[in-house]
Image (cartoon, rainbow, N blue to C red; front, side):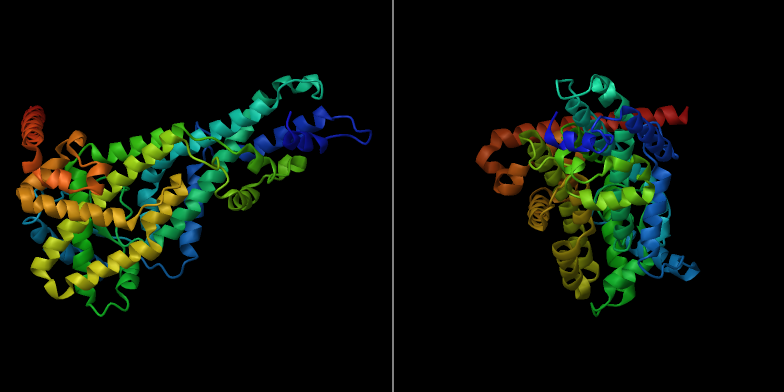
Length: 444
């Protein structure tokens, strides 16, 4: 048994230095009872997480519910943005009507998606923590025989406490982000139950402050950005699941720094691990639940995730630039620069992925992706550019972002270009057949 665990057990020694196993078990049972709460089958209490996020949101300042005028303004911005996008993307318009949300509404409407995105990570952290602690309880000369099965007995509490700490930390991040996002899925992953253009008027007003551009133009610009992003999610069925799959793959490789936990939590009174105490512990443990170094496989996964997120946001940048430059050239440059500054200084997406998996999403990477999509637009036109999204195997890679000429100079490798065109044609034909089949089934 290592020194950290030995120090823990020393807290349960009686006056004569004998280990009081009954005392430990009694406090363990009390702690498990207090933590049970409303946890789901994985030991996670997402209702509590939503409440925490709402409390953080409320602490950020006034958050009025958008009124009829707000809804009308967003609807008008979306109407224009949708008409403009029709000429600059090959993906059709959205079915659901646009919406104006308060910050609190954004938390409520996106919490289901947060659970889907984060639960695999939270569960893996909880499992890894329980396993790591269990490994500490190997019976030896210095360990009482009663502790042979202690790791298994303690596992449920450890899973619950680890899950509670991480979900609390995530909920605090969600609450903070709610005060910054200007649209439903600005952070780059699909958080909405169904594709929809949604803006947060209070945050839009904060975004536009000091730009010297009319509120109407800012709303239209942001409606173009979010409308393009939501059209992409609506038409590219593999995109959102692929992002989730990469996060889940990363989660499977997570390991826990047990020393960081044992040096932080005082188990002399396990019954004192209330939700409030867990919130304090999550602050103390921030950045320490993960092992100090990532595995090679995790770094490779994060590289793929960063490339995919960069390609998504780079495509949105390219589509928005060409659309707004055509219809609103007087404000295009200033608004694009505002988005770039936001990414470099206080990006909600950067905050999210840093808290979730430790990913530092590089603004330069997104610029590289936007330049690549711009080149594809010149080389292949709008339909050819957007056809790349037909299948994940056709997507540019991280190497393509490093060297766009590999993808934009087909004459240097005509055979590779011909192969890609043939594969693209095959996939598009297959997708059309599947669409007709699904339509036929629906008609029946």
